[in-house]
Image (cartoon, rainbow, N blue to C red; front, side):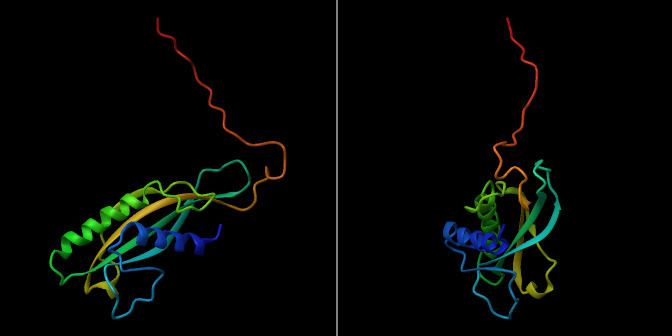
Length: 158
């Protein structure tokens, strides 16, 4: 898993799918001027994922996209919310063309007041997760392929 490629794929896809985004960066250095609307993408945390039975480390990666809009522009309160909804739409079930990650699971979109350096702007935060596995599978290079078997009862109705 190459995290830089994943981050870049997210920004590339967001800009392609949502043409009004002027700036999309990963882990940006906050500066006094930026071309808005802007989106800043960050991987914010890891949690334990579902063990795939391959001896790979399973992680649930939480991503954040901060949407930044100039609050002095007419209808900026509506614009920032529309962008948050559009980003949620693009994010949901997306794999960004990267192998070995699960489709994104959209979690939330809400006002974000926790970055003081962005106080001059309207900021919304969109969050989602991906499940990913790190390391080498013990099943690679063998003829045995791991799989899941579901066992249940079949009920036949008369």
